[in-house]
Amino acid sequence: MKKIVLSSLAALAIGATSLSATPFFVDEKGQVFTTEGEGRKPLVSKESSVFSNSNKLEFSGLHYFGFTSANPSTTAPTANADTSTTVAVGSDTAKYAGNSNGFELRRNYVQVKGFFNDKDYWRVTLDATKELASTTSYANVYFKYAYLYLDGILPYTGVELGMAHRPWIDYEEHNGWYYRSFNKVLLEEKGTATESGLDLVNSADLGVNFKTKTNSFSSEIGIFNGEGYHADKAAANQQNSSGMSLEWRLTAHLIGSGEKVSHNDRLKDTYAHLSTYGLISKNHKDDTVAIGAAGEYDRSFYGIHAVYNQPLFLVAAQYVIAEDKARNSAITNGKEYDAFSINAEIRPIKDWTIIGRYDDYKIDTVAMGTGVNSVSANGTKIIAGLAYKYNKNVSFVGSAKFIDEKKANGGDTGESKDVYMLTTEVKW
Image 1 (cartoon, rainbow, N blue to C red):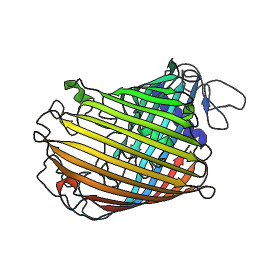
Image 2 (cartoon, rainbow, N blue to C red):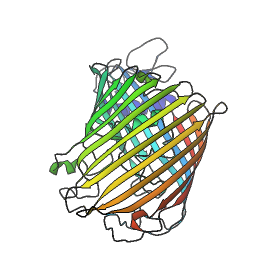
Image 3 (cartoon, one colour):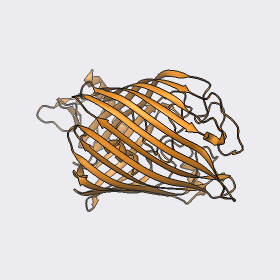
Image 4 (spheres, one colour):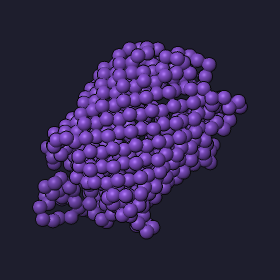
């Protein structure tokens, strides 16, 4: 079965590598090579047409499968005077018609890296996602990442070119909040059947990202289109916009090494980080805006984050402010954001983790031309969870979210909801 799976993935890798006359070999760990060696067996016969010009191919997968029950306190979208935030029935930000229950495939990553040497590679990550009651889920396979990584182009610095990591989300998910399987980080959350939040940035975009790693300091500084990897019209909308997005993360490693910033093991390592992050995006355009149509705004945010981890526990906190400033009359209102988040986990016995998180956010609508503010969302979120590590590849998580959002979309009813999830995390 392993050979069948790996053979299929090797065929997929052809799309990311050139053809040559080198067969594949696999070792006992499942790593794929293009040269013979001790303990390596042919993956396919030398007569096979599956070849690669890479020195080594590395395959991996990450999958989040779960059952979700979302129980809203409100049952219908309401029109209001603020037409820029009025939503239609069936949209992700609408209130629901009632309780929602069902299975989800929240993430389904399959990844291949083709190495040209020990450090330089091309990476392709495919994803298929199906989430509960969400009109923006992706049942079809799409590219999450597709970039070239070149190491050491500057002192201590490598670069990603293509559909690359944006500076903040990946850092937080590998150092401060490890549970994307049932809830995104503060900046990325959207108003969906199971979440609510700021919706300021996502994890990948077309651009370049410079990544610096030293013992006491690490950083990521990038320039991107700004609309994100799953915005259908984002790249096309660049035809009438010269604005780009400058994004960054700067991290001081007070305990632990910045050279391990992407590979910390929270069950073994002790580390303490202090970070600042931000974004300045000019002529940002939502994916709902037609190609060539007006509807740009300038988005900026600035945040600070601290995390301390040791094998027994982790604690992290952050604060962020943000602004969306309308550039033309096609957008009637701007927005101002103010939010903080605190999360912790305790590992009292081997393989068991208790998880907690508290978010508090406020989003003000700013009327264009008058500067008058009105609250469009004022919410809090409490998350509690219990995780069990079944083995090195599989973990199970039970979680509950209690979301209390007042005056959402200019109304008085809000979009409060209770969400319960059972999650299976699979890594290979």
